[in-house]
Image 1 (cartoon, rainbow, N blue to C red):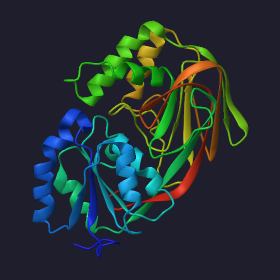
Image 2: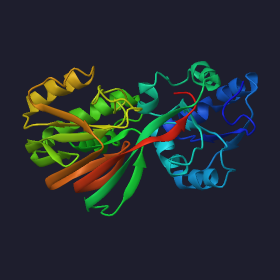
Image 3: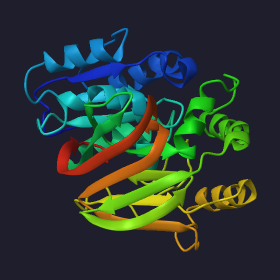
Amino acid sequence: MTTASSALPFAVVLNAQAGRGLAGREWPRLRGELEARGIAYQLVAAQSGAGALAEVQALPPGQPVLAAGGDGTVGALLPALVGTGRPLALVPLGSGNDFAGMLGLKPGQFAGALGRLSEPPRQVDALEAEVVRGDHAGLKKPLLNGLGTGFDAQVTHAYLRAPRQLPGFWRYAWGAAASLGRLPLAELTLRVDGETLYQGQSALAAVMNGTRYGGGFRISPASAARDGLLNAVCSGPLSRLQLIELMARVLPGRHLGHPRVHHGTGRVMELHWSQPMFLHLDGDLYGQAEQVRARVLPGAVTLLNG
């Protein structure tokens, strides 16, 4: 098997806690598959995302990374990957696995994920999110999948309290049901490349590089991670019943023609809320924010099995 960096072993970053411990339980099987395929590797088993990032940053330039975990595992490593040329391979073993899922990679199907390593590497876009005003004002963070505000992020907040035995998709659905009683509505101004795409009451807004979040909800079915553009999606004013109907359309990605849905593409997205709204960045909560800016980073990540 050959890759762009075959002279160096893969640094396998294992988040043993990903997927409520799935990654740790599956590691012996993944290790066996790596060895059966003759893929040289060294294990990076840090206890935190910051620790894993520090270890990857200390690796020789160009040494490829194989992230065995979920979206959070990949997100923690992005500062060592974005714009560096260091190749990345994905083995999804988390709760949501939304970016990997968009690529057709499925948890536990190691043959599919590792079998693609012989293909030529491809560049995929990333984005940089900046919290302009909010709990984490001044934060700039690279993302691979996207960000959400309003009901979307409120569901993520509730998701963390869902029964742990539920798989990722059903935990998100549980969080959505638990959040309906506190439906957020506020004035939103959404600008795309400096032009106002939407202004008015809204329940949620997302800026996406990938197509899905929440373990399979296709919030941005028109996204393409290699087009050098971001996709913005927001709602107009919604009642609880209308929101339930809308989320049923979001699941299969059939909502973009809905009269209360607004969407557009561009390089720079700006969200201005009239009050603090919950915010998630690649599925991780970052408190509440009133103003968020995102810009695309074209071709910033070298992906080996995308």
